[in-house]
Image 1 (tube, rainbow, N blue to C red):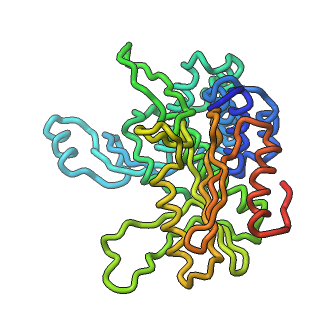
Image 2 (cartoon, helix red, strand yellow):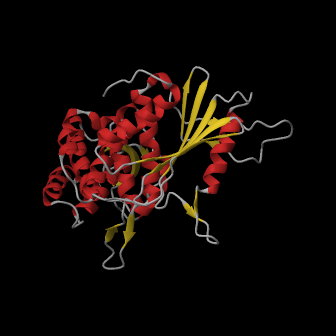
Length: 356
């Protein structure tokens, strides 16, 4: 997938900066100009900068429940526990109370991720030192077992919105952990795998068009099944990656990040497009184009690999334009932007681009 890992990792930073616009702020500028040989080093740099910035605003606090034996009443009295103390002639009250605390799951995730990154030999000494410095402010925060984190129930509100990007970086790190049987330590898996990169690739392309081409109203809607009769209760959801719209014209883009952009027919050894991907985008297009106008087009957009033969085709299927293209991520970011711009202008014509 890569010729120069340093270039690809720098582009991952740019992709992250579109997925999380906070990275466009000036205090992250120097990260974009550095060269990283390891993805963990990039994550450590982002977290060190981001946590330092968060410390200036103050760590997020939320109410945490405590049960304690106190000399005076605080909160709600635990009758059972207090009677137990009286029987033992202890002058204590069992109390249940809530207290605003930095020792909550948001800060626990930040601390756990930072400590794990500090243990990685792939993280530069400079970045480990920076993380160690910000961790001095986390003495009152506990570590958390990564496998126990319930990512889906984390809720971001007005007073913890600044944590959103930081915790997404933590998710990328912790989701790629491999528990080593050697002294219970954690090792980092390779982030540059299909699962992680696929999510980032999809989010990046969507946010690129959303920011630079507001007139195309980039979104990721679900497409309704265009059936003549009967129920759709048991039909699968058609969840798109990117849909661009301008007046009556629609372009549905389905992003793919595979190690191999073409499938090999085992019987003859010939290379073809991935069948399931083609069936999927064709289904999306035909159900979106309810009136069979031909104004809805579909595109499979693969991250380019070093394979000799890579997808690059345009054709008509049942009255709708279909394309299979690749996006080269292993080049200067300006070239990546130009490739995405060309996709938009080749279908919608000349449209205004909002510069960064």
